[in-house]
Amino acid sequence: MCHAVPARVTRVLDGDLAEIDLGGARKTVSTVLVGPVIEGEFLLVHVGYALGRIDPDEAEATLAALAELDALEEARS
Image (cartoon, rainbow, N blue to C red):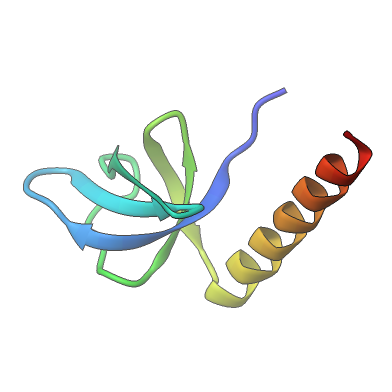
């Protein structure tokens, strides 16, 4: 199963590209599917493509839930 994750736009690049913060890692993604983006907004990202925009509160809640799942998984290891 695949899923998209929220990521914050850190920089708008030339063309249909943006740099995002994905859990502390900086990645370049295509924004061709969502149109123009602005720095600071949250996008749902999957395999190098922004698939849609997401409300900042919902993005933060999702990121917190994912971090909690990671912590639980580490504790089980």
